[in-house]
Length: 122
Image (cartoon, rainbow, N blue to C red):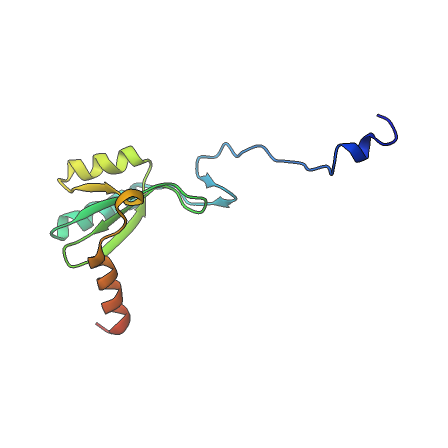
């Protein structure tokens, strides 16, 4: 290495290889989905009516999630193993499922959140 080679190459930047841990997204570690998540989703679809599923893709800060919204706008969101798993879960429980990145979330969910914010006691 010559005297000026150090300056021609620019600043030294050390990059870490991507994590091999499947529960890591971007620079944030997240909890992987588990049986408790599936149990919660199952309980939600069996105790509410008019439930629809919205599959949310993996992002820099969260893994794949399944958002379930009932007829009145009540909702729940849990991590799931994959997009395919989420759609299969919905099909198995006769719940229509959509890609949230394409269709967004339903207005009734936003209305439900607004009602809860205006009336926090009930």
